[in-house]
Length: 253
Length: 161
Image: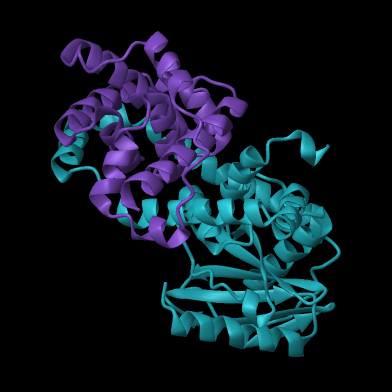
């Protein structure tokens, strides 16, 4: 596809909205670096998005409306709605099992303290590496990634900007851990990537484990149990985790 | 009722006021509950928002006939919206825009641009979903978003500097 044939203004919208695939996003970011006029326009669009979202927050539906609707839609009527949501959860679970078997069958020799979670996390990371596109949304802007998670799975984990520390954000994806969708942030770590998955705070947290060239570290913070998984070396991962923790502590989301 | 906050936020921007939005959402939710059999899979939130949008149009036609702009007028309004090129406010200026100003600027967008922007920024819908909800092609969604954002930036540049 010839980039020049597409109005850069339209490509810019798609980049802002996280609608470009990883290759197109990378091409756009290169173009942004070379074109100061485009970069200035992009900066204005980013500023507009921020100001719209921070100063025009959504009002929740009035409690009276909610109550009226709940009263009107008795159990007989609401019943058909529920199976839809259950179907979705079952579908997600089935998908996770399918992917786990497909991508991680050779990779079940782990013996950490909590095998299921660590296994699922490493499998998810490994699958992401194998797929060639480690992210579902490619964006180096954490202001894009958080709303994307929020819209999809109603969880918005802290996504610190670590570009200055040498860990640029690559994007985000949704993993299914223990049958539940979980947000994973993907950062670049030298020649490798690291997946940071935010699980509910009640999830088990073990110190660290490594297996088959993969390293996993977990810690609790901001109401989440974070897991960082990478194929890089332990030393590099530790450096990343320190930067991530420091960024969250210094700038609470 | 799942996605009620989304439905309300969308109706709030489409109708322009809280009371009308409540009426519209109530009617839309009842339609959705009764028509749950027509749900053909896919994104349930997008399905509900499409019902909210259709309900808004019929509700406005019934209760606020003067406020309703017909489809032909919408297209004309979209065409005549100037392509902004001149105003290039600094990002600092954009960041300083206050709530009332922004609200008026978004509310003042031509309706097709406004609903597209609202679905994207305040409902967080994907291009595909916006295209389904508003019944246009994905390319049209992208160009409408580009126009809407450029108009807002231009307005900030013109009125605030």
